Image (cartoon, rainbow, N blue to C red):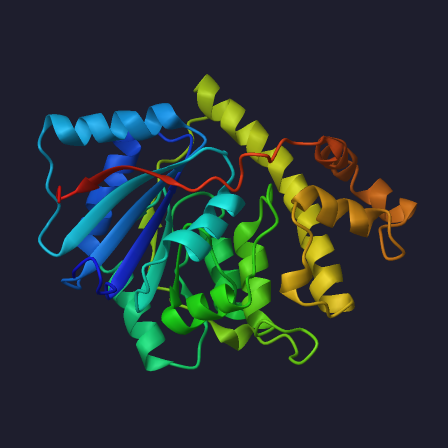
Length: 319
């Protein structure tokens, strides 16, 4: 791989609230899972400059050098938002790789996970994506069974071939900023083959590889920090339910293109909620948590720095 030659594989690691130790463990797992001799790993730290600097210092202090054929870049993005970080990678940083893997910063792929995803997509060249399934956590078995039966993308580990990345770029498709359920929207766009006005929902566009999985640290119910994380996750899940309903309305009911999605999740949800197809009071009464999520989504967030270019903090091996 040279500066002008696209790598065969690219791996994107989303990081924000993890510790530097956690990110290092994920990178080590990815290094062990890479089977191509030409791979570029991008660690995208969003909204947490201290984490980006700390990770860089830790690597520098031990003169870190990744395995041969692997390049690692640490990027910092000013705004802490996964959806906008995704947009920045797709439209600014994507190096033209044949296959791009997306990994959450706390998910350590199993040694054969990347190979299994790569093999699955090579054996089904018509597919637009391939996803792994969870194996850790109380609901992992249920989630895996649902995915194997009905399809879908799991945000902890999935991959997109070059043709999908190029289509996203050519159509200038961006995820609404502030979106929680990024993987659900990506999956919906691909299942409609980028154009709901021309194509019906087809879950066969996304392959699910049941043997490709990852490891995460299980939440400890006695630990105050993990309890707070769980409570926040429950609140965000209510927001995610509203997002999914709004996406279904936009793409499925009205058959609008993903290019016309509102720029923020706030606008997406509020347009649906207060529109002609929004929920009635009977449905709201069955889901009271929606009101708490809606109140949170009404808050206006400052996105003035969202379009700033990512900053390269460090690269390994050093040029």
